[in-house]
Length: 550
Image (cartoon, one colour):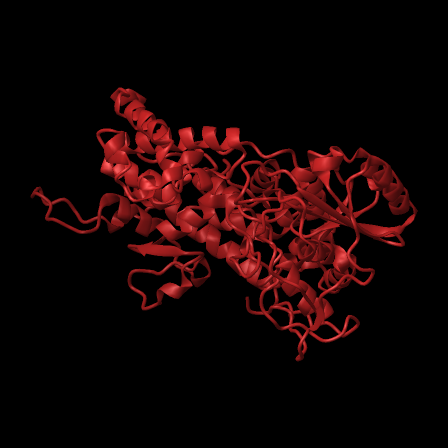
C-alpha cells in the first residue's frame, strides 16, 4: 500500500534463541499453579499465543499455549496434559493481553477457560497504521529490527513429544510481543488512530462465537465444474460423508479425501465401486478402503427427487445474492455498490488503511442492496450502528455512504420515441440501460461513463464496467463472499484484511516470518508514519460515534 510506514536500511538482527533459553513444557498441575503465581507477580501486559494443528487435525484446539510477562518470563503449557487453564485466567484475566491476529487464537483459548477482559492485537494495529505486510515476523523486523526464526508454523503441533526446535520457535513468538505492542501503540497515538484501535480491540474481546457457515460444502475447490443441480447434490453428499469421517477420526478433511477427488468422482459418475477405484486418487490403498463410503454418497445424491436438489447458486455469506449476479438481479443496486466502494476507497486512502478495516465489506454490501429509507445521514448512521460498525467507522463513513447510496433519477427523456415498428436488436439490455442511468457522472464514484475516455483502473475495488455502471466481477465477489475465512498472512502467504469481529480465517493467523526489510536494533527509530491527506481526521472520532447530521 502506498504510504506504508518506511523502514530504515539495514539487515535485521537475527533472534534465534529466547533471551532466557527455551522454557520447559509444563504438564503437571502443580507446576502450572506455581507458574500462575509468577505471572500474577509480574508487571505490565501479558503476551499470549497458541499453536494448533490446522491441516492435520479436524479440531481447532490448542496443542501448545505460550505466555510471557515482564518479571515472570515465558511459559510453555501443554493443554492436552493439563486440561483447562482457569488458574491462569485467575492470575491474569484482568490484565491486558497482547496477541497477534487475536481472533484466530481466542476461540481455542476460550476452550481452555482463557478469556481476556481487554486486549491489544498487534496484527490489527499494523493494518490500522497502514502496514501492508502484517505477519508477526515482518512486523518485528520492520518495527523492532529483529529477525525471528522461521520454519515451523505449519507443523503438526499435536505431535508428542514436541521437538526442541519447534519449542524454540514457539517461545520466540511471544519473546518480543509486548515490545511490539508498545511501539505500535506509540505509532497509533502519533497517527491519531489510538481510539480506532481501542474500539476495534474491544469489539474483538466482546465478540460472540462465530455462527457456522451456511452450506460449507459450496466452498469445495473446483465446485464451479459442477454444471447441474444433480452434480451439486453429489458434491454435497460426498463433502458431508467426508466431514463425518474426518470428525470421527479427528483428521483434517483434506487428508481423508482431497477436494480434487470429490470433483473427479462427481464428474466421472462411476457406476460402481470398481469404476470408482479406477480413478487416480481413489486407486491408492488408503482411500480404496473407503470406496463404499463414497459410492453410497454418490448413490444417495442420484436418488434424490428434483425438489430436493440444491439450488444452482447458494446464498453468499451475508444472505445476499452472489456479488457477480447483482448486475442481472438488480442493476441499480450494482451501480450503487460501485459508488459505495469508490467512496469508501477514497476515505481509506486518505487515512492510510485497508478499506476492509474501514468498514466490513459485508455491511457495505447490505447497505448497497437495501439502503435505509428514507435515505438520510441519520438513517445511514443508525444502519451502520445496527450492523456492528464501531463509532469511529460511523463517523468517517456516514456522509460518504449517504451520498453514494442516493440513486440518480432515471432520465425517461433519454428513451427513443416509439415509432410503432418492432425494435431493432441492441446489445444494451433494459437492465443495462437502468444501470447506465443509475451511474453517477463524477470521478469520485470511480465509474467509467460510456462517453468518457477514462480507463478501468478508476473502478472501485475489483469492479467491472457494464454500460457505464460499476458492478462487481466474479473475482471481487468471490473474495468478499469468503469474508472472514480468507487466508491470512503466515510465512509469506496472502494477508487477511478483516478487522474487529470479522478477523477470522480458515488457515493459520498472520504470523509470517518471511521477507526482509527491518531496521537494526531494538531501539532504532521507526519509520515516519505516512502523511495524511486532506479529508476526515482519523483522530476526530473520539469514541463518540457521532457524525455530521447524525
